[in-house]
Amino acid sequence: MCELRCLRLLAFDEAQNRVLALAKVVGRSEHVGVMAATGLVLARDERARVDSPAFDASMMDGYAVRAADVTDAALPVSCESRAGGSAPTMALRSACRIFTGAPLPKEADAVVMQEDTDREGDLVRFRARPAVGAFVRHRGDDLHAGDVALARGTRLGAREVAMLASLDLCDIDVAPSPRVTIIPTGDELRSPGKGAEHDGASIPESTSGALGLMATRAGARPIIRAPVRDDATDTRRAFEDALGSSDVLVTIGGVSVGEHDVVRAALDACGVELDFWRVALKPGKPLAVGRRAGTVVLGLPGNPVSAMITFAMFGVPLLRAMQGDSRPLPRTWRATLGRAITRPPSDRLELARARWDERGEVVLVEQQTSAAIIGLCLADVLVCIPPNIERLDAGATVDVYSVAELGL
Image (tube, rainbow, N blue to C red; front, side, top):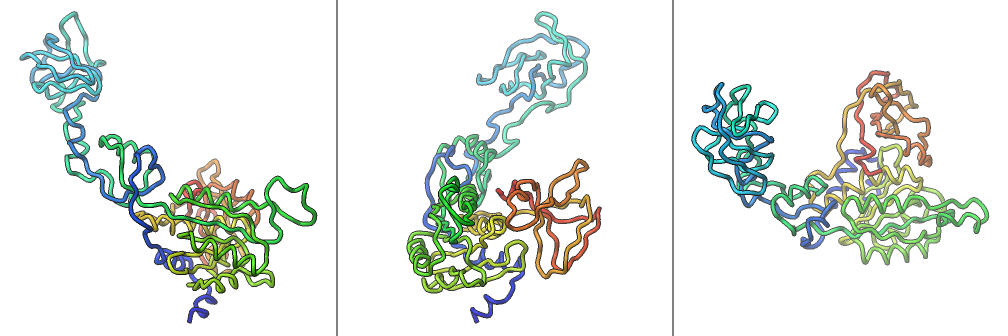
């Protein structure tokens, strides 16, 4: 039964769902400082402890007044309120000089911004009567005490860190970071910068560092191993070692059907049960997914673009789901094609590299092969070309993934 599943070309959506079904939250939550939490996921709801704002405050530099007191006549200025100070007492039928963020006197119900006033010594005139509540940020406008400010499963970026700090929090509970081991494979690989030391058609290994960065951005703790040659014994030994110390094992290359592709056999020898192999996706068809005990295995294609795109579509969502992320899958957006697209008949979803043009439409870049990293560098988006579609006309609406959001 497993062999039949592995041989079938799995639809993209089904493959994503199967990968997410393998995700289990790893370990117990961790207590970290708010400023060290960027990229991590909240392990519990964070609620407001007090109303936010905690007091009625001015949104402008100007004068606090009781709106009903404002007429054509000038009002005396009886007090001043500054940010960080206590709210003063404002005399009857008077105004209070007030600054942005300062507490509103309890006798006032509006603020007139400075540009709409004329100051004459200790008197101030108003060019128009304000509405009650004008330029006042009322207590509890943003949050009431007990409200959920950020929900469990929220991934923390700069704005969320600012929110947590505004709640007067310095430490929070976050989901633990999955341990990821990345192992590139192939006789042809060498370390970058070592070209002069090698003969023949060796190539610099360019993918593992990119995947490590993507994993880190997804909140994981990656370890990148040195490339393993296409030797069954060496490959099995490297995999066995990684399986015992990782939540996710990512292999690069060697999952196709060539005589020197030893990854699948090595995984099988290590007791990894494949859930599926081969996805109806271009680039990225030879994707192998399985698990052994608590470790999920992703066998990625060897070409750099294929590996990075499949990791963005399957590996990153897996890592996010393992942290309880409430939105593990990447979002799609709608865009308009600037030029027609034609392609040979295909039963696979194609993620074509494209850029924004000066009209705000998307056009494909020239370099579309799965080995051309330059095509990915030139791209702003990945255009989704559905299976069995041979032509999309200029002006057609298409789904796209943002390359920046994917972390590519």
